[in-house]
Length: 115
Length: 115
Image (cartoon, rainbow over all chains, first blue to last red; front, side, top):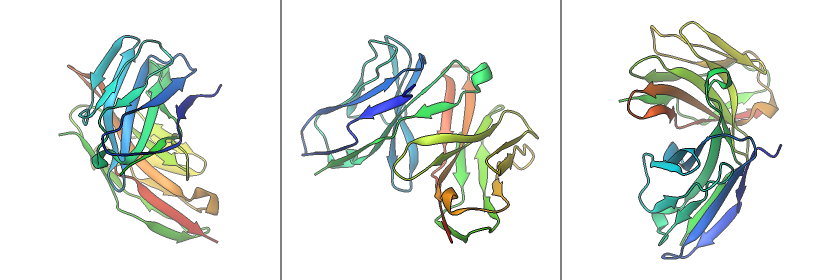
């Protein structure tokens, strides 16, 4: 089991460029999440999905888009990158709750710099 | 609103010292509480959890007790090791009637253990 994988690990974008952060999980989890981690600010939820075809906004969705065409993949799209989007991005997934106790499994993160 | 507050870091300790990282929460309802650990260059991993008042979560020598009366979930370890150097996040899960399960993370506390 690879768990949650994210690509790329690092990326530098120029202002106005676009990119897609990839996230894949092999645990057959329905729930998937995108967070950003700014220094000293903890994790903020960008978007989440409760299953294939269903996505919803989190706390800080502006400037981002997501899709969930399969259970495994949950890509995050940045359109017109801005310096305020410089951050570390984490993808996470979890099982249905109950005995799994809602534990989230995190990918290793993507460090994005927008200059 | 719902939130998690952690003691600010960074925290630097000598090996074999006693560790406490304070965490308090504000929540409507009955949250589950978690501590996650993030080692350098990696994503967050679940360290321990507690799902109801007076529960004690424990793992790898770390402990935390869910105290409803003080709304706290302080992380403790009796004797830290260099390998415990990481960032520690307190988090809670709430089941909300309109939006389902929501997760809130603290800002993280960086711990460095020196030999």
